[in-house]
Length: 425
Ligand SMILES: NC(=O)c1ccc[n+]([C@@H]2O[C@H](COP(=O)([O-])OP(=O)(O)OC[C@H]3O[C@@H](n4cnc5c(N)ncnc54)[C@H](OP(=O)(O)O)[C@@H]3O)[C@@H](O)[C@H]2O)c1
Image 1 (cartoon, protein in one colour):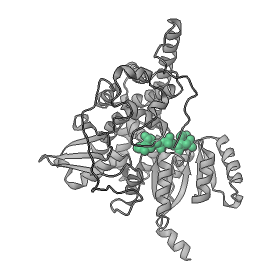
Image 2 (cartoon, helix red, strand yellow; image 1 turned 90 degrees about the vertical axis):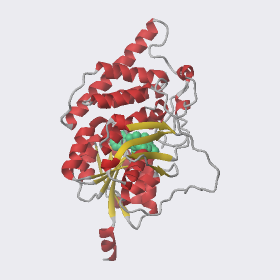
Image 3 (cartoon, helix red, strand yellow; image 1 turned 90 degrees about the horizontal axis):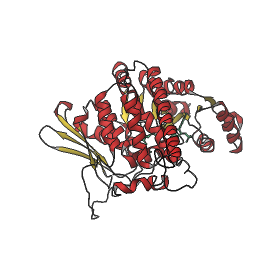
């Protein structure tokens, strides 16, 4: 009896992408607040061993993986982890199952932390089901911003950003009226190549690009941080989340990544959000908002001497940042293409098929060649995404062929030829 009363008061979470960097950080927040939060469902892609460990610890009702094979692997991993069959969760796979766990009446909050457009439909449906959604997966708004925000308005869902910059902006916006806001300033660490001369970028390897100076994240976002595509996506995400025009969103390089975002009000006052570089703070905020509670993150020690630098981004060295502004200005499906082409190009770079500067070359060419459409449904967006990927792959293949014929590199290959790096959380 006591148990059921307690569980009635608990908040149930669905975590999309539980085995990733945001997913594991979310589970750590749950672990620290186990009196308040329970896991209803976990969804992951391929890391069955980690998922089995999470199931053993958090005992979700449902576990979703990407394929039928994955479900078999998960069953084996659970058996190996020594969990009795009676304690296994219901196991499902594929996009429909992701939608089911995101819209289930059992789920109070959905954490959207799958990487890429794979997370779009389930997040959109969670919004339509009026859930609170903790949004880490920025590709959701980059690809389907209009549709998702229309759904937020129609359903009254709460979309709380987890991306640290947007979470910071969300906090700063609580200081005044939206009508008095003139500008949003997003900070960027500048990535691992902030001080690398532009002519050296053709030589950098995936290992170099995966060395993010301040954050430990999944591979895609880490490479996107090195090209500043990630910051471009964040500009787009901010426009949708807070109703800014691209011209109202500035990017400032701040290598220390401690000031996450700033909001300028009409009287010239600037409110900044400052915290340690630890994603558990914004994740917890998304769970507890509008309340705050003790978070398992280090506090800033103000007695220590420190220096914070701010400077303008180099649009010439990092052309994808500029392109993101242009795509958001263009509207329609341009940002969906931007994301799809970037995902393909990042994958090719990680597999050493193209060089670092070729990431932006592939993305720019794909965006220039894809017709801009007005997607009216998630199906339309996924279609644009598919076509854009196919075009980007084609451009890479043609570039490689042209390179081979001319005995040089089409889009250019990275310098080192060792095995591609594996994903890390
Ligand atoms: N990491 C950060 O600090 C951070 C900060 C701000 C925003 N974000 C955003 O948050 C999202 C996640 O980033 P991340 O760094 O956590 O990425 P990540 O470490 O690569 O994790 C991605 C997650 O997505 C899962 N996944 C992939 N395909 C799937 C599928 N078909 N079905 C179900 N799950 C699938 C992965 O599962 P497997 O690993 O099992 O394959 C993994 O759990 C991205 O959109 C990123 O831009 C991240």
